[in-house]
Image (cartoon, rainbow, N blue to C red; front, side, top):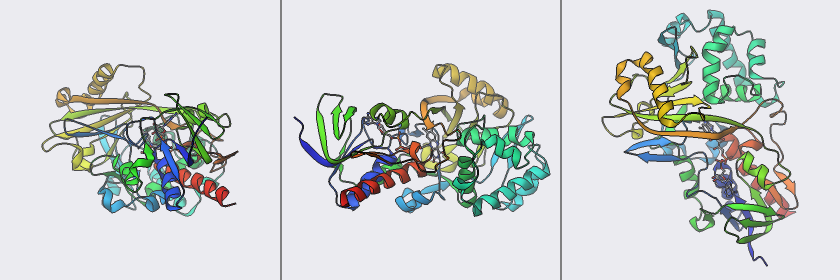
Length: 416
Ligand SMILES: Cc1cc2nc3c(=O)[nH]c(=O)nc-3n(C[C@H](O)[C@H](O)[C@H](O)COP(=O)(O)OP(=O)(O)OC[C@H]3O[C@@H](n4cnc5c(N)ncnc54)[C@H](O)[C@@H]3O)c2cc1C
């Protein structure tokens, strides 16, 4: 016999689960959140190693995310911005590619860089203007590569800029992802900054959790199976929800627990962190491999953006590899050092590996027609609901929004 433990049981305490909990708490509904991990945050966690803040996979918050603006207190997060644009390693040197609207003084240097033609750069500017005015989730859906070609971009700028840039953002250098996601992220880059919280990306879920009663966040509690509104825990215990079970795990986890949900597929990435005596570049910018020399697709120096990422007198280098699951961390680190020695000189040999994070499911795959419907259903019927980035789109914004919307569906059904 199971006890009637709560009105709404939330499974998963990533951003989606926390946003759902917030909406239920605000509505004064009884809820309990279960998460297998030791702390909330899901894919948005940070480890502190020797005084360095290592995000569990490099990621950034885009300040223009509409849902994040509502859900988060940006001032309290003490956000630090990247310089817009990127440094692109091409033909043996790092070339700045900047946004002519946001950094006019750099535009000329940018126009001379061998990344694409002047016409390409004008197309980037016109794309930025276009995405500001459109609903990205309403454009005809095709792959990002098809969209870039239809927009007239040359193969050179596609290979030297868009592949490494979107390889970093969408974890997809093949550009097979839905162009709706591409247009959405371009819009967000055009309308705001890329930022890191002062002490690591985990400040985001920590802030969300701080508004919730700690006793309702039950960590270290994995759900093994769901039957209707009853959850069987990994330790054999059972919990029953009077009104609703809201599954806010990642997509593959939801597909395991809910027969109504399909596994969305996964995009993987590996981030390696190195301690360096000094930063390899002065600019607080994203750095891209425009030569496809691999294994690193993109890197940055988080401590140049937000000083709290490294102790005084040291620099933290974050190097990201798309996939990268096949090699042991030390072997991958050697290959990364070898590549970056060609970029930054022999000092790279002294970089000390602090940590390596392979995230097999960093983002759900979003190949068309994944985003044909901008929002997939949150209500599955019979008191079962689902939230998570796989229901909207693979981003901090998508996860937060889907959690809120799933909770709103629960509340509407309770009120009916
Ligand atoms: C390396 C990397 C880079 C990224 N880059 C960016 C970026 O730059 N910008 C951006 O906006 N987004 C980025 N993202 C995506 C963003 O982080 C995710 O879309 C978002 O965090 C997903 O949140 P979620 O709540 O949907 O899922 P998750 O964060 O996966 O949360 C699911 C939770 O469910 C729990 N759980 C799973 N199964 C069970 C179970 N059976 N029982 C109990 N608990 C369970 C897990 O422990 C976890 O806490 C990146 C992600 C990664 C990993």
